[in-house]
Length: 295
Ligand SMILES: Cc1ncc(COP(=O)(O)O)c(C=O)c1O
Image (cartoon, rainbow, N blue to C red; front, side, top):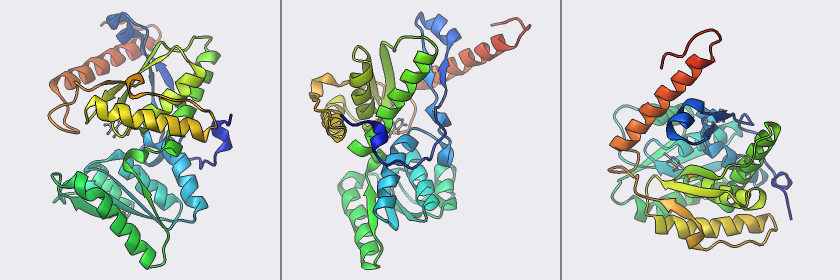
């Protein structure tokens, strides 16, 4: 069996990210809750895609790629991080985004511009039928210029990229052992392209076989994720020379929390954000020595 360290990886993020206890929110929910702060991965603005890109960009460097092409939503975090990673290694980023060309570039679109990414916008209605052709056309144009191109699929969701979240389980395992705490009973994570969850399933089966992994869909129906993640987890385990299989029904997905469309928070989602923010503030107030908790 291979280890995640047996695969080439370029260091991009700041690891380990904190595994932060949430005592106040835990008390209000009647559970013991920790949050893995992968918003602190740092590179290119941070987020969950950094762990996958450490493996995917190592592959791009090995292949001496000159143009990196990827896709995502209008304000895609993944696309923004691919643009940053491509520039770090002297490659040109090309981003094919779902949505219309904006009049004003804000948020991730502004960062995409700062990184000098070439942007193509696809009408949301035709996006899923056009996306592969659009990325292939950019790759063909690069090849015609004599520049080697690499297409990184939506969310960096490949078996190689998923190794990043096997590694995240290893990282959390070390953090918990250091605190003399047992593995979690449940991990809850959002799922959009499926790569994070596939890696978590592989890592958890190896290190925490009793831990359940629950994916909260940010977009599609549960059946789509179950088929895709079962296959990706299996391919990821095969990379590790670790013959394991998952059936779609082994993958636990909750798809009832998607708002009116991708990236649009539901009323319940906004309530949850307020609840967490206020409980976390309370936690920090409690942490100031000598100051009473007023909450
Ligand atoms: C808002 C949001 N949260 C979480 C995720 C989950 O990451 P993954 O792509 O690895 O499933 C995504 C991915 O698209 C996302 O857009």
